[in-house]
Image (tube, rainbow, N blue to C red; front, side, top):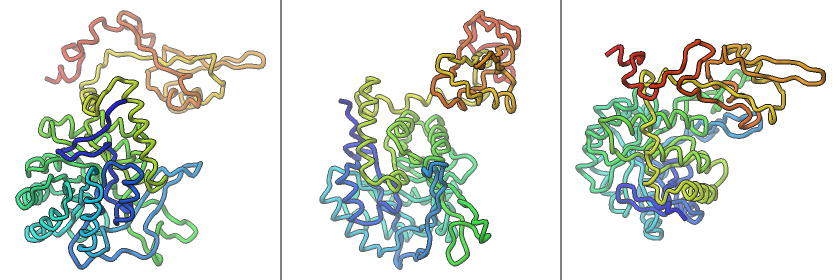
Length: 435
């Protein structure tokens, strides 16, 4: 069976699945239960200076639900740990001693002042923790105090604080990045310039989950008032994957280790992050929805996939998809695909026809015979947009066929170029023409 053990920054864990810094890692009893269930590591909920922060004592979470009440996204307004610093440190020390084979990372957030970091770092190091994660991403509550995302949105601050931490601590430093920024590469480059050993991303996204229309109050609310919160869960995965890929393929951060976070609910989600360069994968929402034992499915699923694909270790698959992520102007405009409908499995629901007719290119037509109807592709209008594939309720009933070199595209009347594979030097390549 494939070996899914992880060695991230020299921090070893039996699997790459770590619980992210969040409510599930708030205290000793939670973390012990997580390790008993099989999690490879945890990032302890963010610690700050004493006196502790005060959280709201009303609704902290808001949920975006699908039609089947499946959780699509979770919004939270909970702050960093509201327990005394020494209580947290004592519990971290006990847990690490009891579970030496599991990764123990401590998330930190203190004011953007050198003395504050100089004071807290040796206290964390004394617990025996394996590393620290700098929380430069929290978008609510703490950012209004000049911490969290307020730091993560300023590359100069990221570099400065990271350098302080590298100076005052021997522990590996992971910088957790905020997605609430235009170009994720800038803070990643700043972290690398400050000496960061790795980055983790994404933290939660600024959000308002909804409005109670009967009361005309935003949701969730405390005593009639609410605040924007941090959005996480399955719905943020595409955003997280893009940002991970941007860092992984950026020449300025090539080789910078990445801990991937954002919407991981299945082993397949985790495998996608690893394929785009992540060395470990952090999970929060899925554990809050399904409980800690979900890690067992994550591990077995990842092992089975790696066995089927012939990957012996995580390193064998890590980053293998990064080279396929390109800028738009590098895409091959000589490549042509057309939709194909499998009439044997088609249930004649007509969804493909409706969406193509109303919102796309009118490339699907219906023919009616007594007692039956049939939907077919008009290749002269099909642009290969893939919308019908996405909307079809029967998997693999509509697929895409690649036109071969020399085959005529009925939409344009032109034959597919025989040298379309050499797109980087093709005269029709817009990036080449621009050059």
